[in-house]
Amino acid sequence: MATATESPLARDLSGLPRPTSEAPPAILTWRAYPLVLVPVGALVVALLLNQFVALDYVHVMSGALWTGIDIFMGLVIGPILGRMTGPARADFVQRLVPTMLFLMPALASVTITAGIYLAMMEGIFQLNYLAIQLAGIFVLILAGQGFGIFLPNELRIVLELRKEHPDVGKIGRLGLLNARLAGVQAVFQVALIFVMASLAAGLVNL
Image 1 (cartoon, helix red, strand yellow):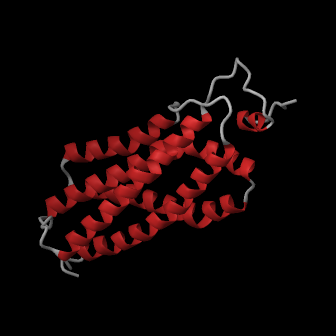
Image 2 (image 1 turned 120 degrees about the vertical axis):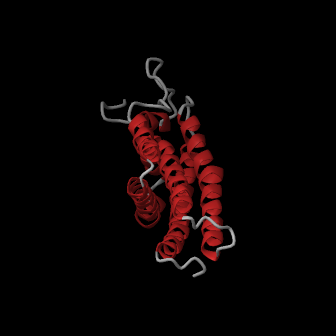
């Protein structure tokens, strides 16, 4: 018999269907709104103010959060998930995904957009500059991984959780893959930060 603290996923592991009164996990909850509205709203305000300092603040803060979360996911969460059993890993992933699904795309989009506007305001958004070329390559790699692998995997996890009998093995594998992918993204983000620091120092050709 399921206890009061037992998760919906744990009940599914017994092979029993979800109670008919229990709705599947919601994809969009009230917690998701500030995760998207705060960074995007800050970017819009900075652009409307047309102030370099405000836009730089948004760029640095969103970039720091994006990179920091990826490093934490890759170096801390990834190894922990790797040592967990299938059911425990799936239960952890189902609690993590609703936040990551909305937060990471918002931070990535705001960071990249603010960075492009900053480069344009400084007059260094020139495609013949080596630093801009490298930054563009790193951004394309990060965007491809994030929106081509990370985000689809998050959506697959959410859709799997909404099934009457979620595949805990699939959920755990996708969650572990995303955690490891976050670590790979962190490497490219650190390289991108080096390029950004070079640009800030006026070293457009490194």
